Image 1 (cartoon, rainbow, N blue to C red):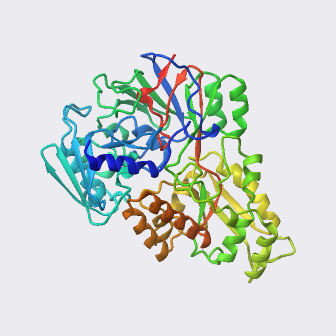
Image 2 (image 1 turned 135 degrees about the vertical axis):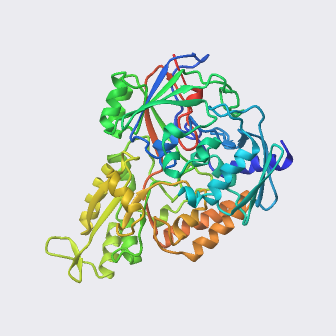
Image 3 (image 1 turned 30 degrees about the vertical axis):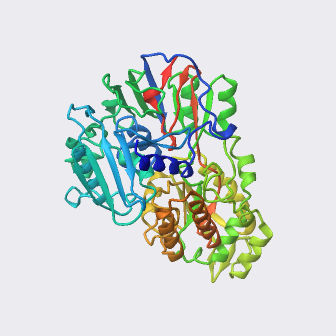
Length: 530
């Protein structure tokens, strides 16, 4: 690897930690079988939602597509360094505006067409610029993408602004490399799993709509990243992604041996699973923010910073963890999780202070009515929350938070887990509270500071400026300082409620060995069953 590539890999260490097992008991790796891997068999993985759009930005889509599509580079979950994948070598210039990738020879897609530098360029162009004729939007994380050039087996990406996060962007599911036959399709057809042709270790075989997708291994797969425990074809013969929407039924399916691994386990099911000899694997997601609730600050209620601060101070985060969650979770002390090396502790500004919260609501003109609910100008202090079903704990957590807020005179309409409502709320700012966790490859400040951000729907010039600094900074110490300032600004302006660090809790049979990526995707190419 070139010196520039080595520097890039070293800089990757400051970007974000990875999977299970890096830092604490909360992030334990698989406790399943050890020793020599066993070849063969079928693994059934239960997820929370059927994937109807392979380009969607959610865990279910990422988990499925990680098995089918390779990336140009891979961020190692144990060291957080950047490794080549479809690129055998990579480098960037001093100011992070030009990235160069040498594409591997003898890689083929599952339809037997060869991977070439031209194909990679075509993928980058479609990601970076979109294609209106195919109704293909540009991928927002390709910040600053201008164009790519090809010379032999080398692709050079030119950005019109610095972007030190570009390696992280390329390791994300949405940047998986698709075959020319897939790129030729419009968005609607590319979104369907049966039309996706990749170079990954598994290939689409069949599906039962709304129920399951079956993948089979590629026997000739031989280009996994050097950091993977298995460099060649998958140990498993087949993988079945089976949808079980109800979390209690997912846990029961593992207990009854109907599935081998299930994502989205409720805290209330963890003790019985452990007592039954099953694995409970809590997988950290340091590539994501902490779980949070964005304030749509143009809303006529939460546009008052005093109201937003009162709601923040009205949540006892540790009580949420102790009462509703489990030891798999940790109360957040910032917008980023504790395992992110760029984490900055702002806990002094978000502690539980119900009396101060009540005073702030008084000062904002919201006074308790005869029924205890605060009102102002004849309007009740009644707020609605949207949150995805990709997190099984948002709804029960906010049932508890609802009781804390009720003591302040605030009424909450808890719509967490309502997928239809969440999808509608993603693009409509009429819902004042938007619960999520999100990867911040575009820059942490931009997540909250862009006018079109679905977290706030409001422009914040200070955060936009800080994000520009973040994306051009190559010095680790200065980068950490910039991102700390972003975190403090988000809290100072009360743009989000901070909740708990992001983890995805899985249950697995005792005979299953499985590891996970920095985005919590299961690494099924290296998984096996004893």
